[in-house]
Length: 383
Ligand SMILES: *[C@@H]1O[C@H](CO)[C@@H](O)[C@H](O)[C@H]1NC(C)=O
Ligand SMILES: *[C@@H]1O[C@H](CO)[C@@H](O)[C@H](O)[C@H]1NC(C)=O
Ligand SMILES: *[C@@H]1O[C@H](CO)[C@@H](O)[C@H](O)[C@H]1NC(C)=O
Image (cartoon, rainbow, N blue to C red; front, side, top):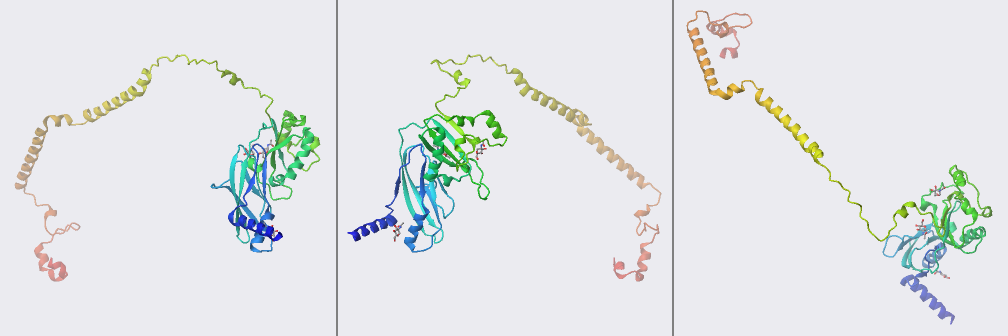
């Protein structure tokens, strides 16, 4: 009997590890905070069973929507270090089914496990709580507020202030996701967590004080006014300057522009007041003025080119006559020069004589030079 049960359990464990039959089912509710813990000790135990390694192992996780690289928009994942448990948390916005794949890595041995968590998101009949308040808890990191005990510890004093048991935690967000800054790695400095709580019961008076103008001014000056004294002896440090309240039952004053848009069932087109617009001045300015200037410039240029050039008129009318006169004058001048050269008595210019030394003015007969050739270098005398 007992051995049969052991066999059954081992078959189940084998199916779970090999066949992936141990997919977990979880049932989050629309509009309520959902937290799933990925317990690091469980997985350490699984790796221990698989490989027989005695030491506890550092473990990290990766979570994604099946067939996609990331998680659905409403679901977040966090893990502080490989020795801490991981958390999947968020507040679903619409019903449906998600298959989330979890990959578990052993950081020492590089072993890996895969499992699936099937999210069946249920819709709720209850209307969302009309009074919703969001607080900033300054002295917490998000995974410190995710375990149910921490949420309970936060809720109990709040119930006392709110004077109701009907509180529900709607959402938890790390301040880092809302534009907060990563704190210095000093003890006591935490990221901060936004926690949204809803109820059907109206807010207590001290919540409204946070929206008070005087308190707001103090906040802007950097002071931290302590409000809701019942909450003070508490592990949670609430930033009363960073409380946002949503009150769906109190109608917010409608902006006046909204009334102007009221519709009485008829359509009145805007009156056809468009006058005929006279485009003539524009036309003159854009087309005619540049054309006029271009024409003026053109005329000016033609005048300079045609009328101000010297000799053009003459050349135009009797070019061939001009050329004839030119040739005639050259011819007669040459004739005259020839006549003068034939009748001259003057000696020839020195520069036209052979062997004239331009520097000394000395004249040497070429015949003299030739007889003296023994004293001249051979190369020169050959020339
Ligand atoms: C690991 O083995 C121990 C006993 O050998 C068993 O009790 C435990 O459930 C196993 N854990 C896992 C996660 O399989
Ligand atoms: C919960 O908080 C996250 C992060 O700010 C936001 O994206 C999401 O819309 C919130 N969900 C609800 C239901 O308010
Ligand atoms: C509220 O907290 C956010 C994130 O830390 C910060 O950016 C914002 O300035 C705070 N607002 C006030 C009024 O302190």
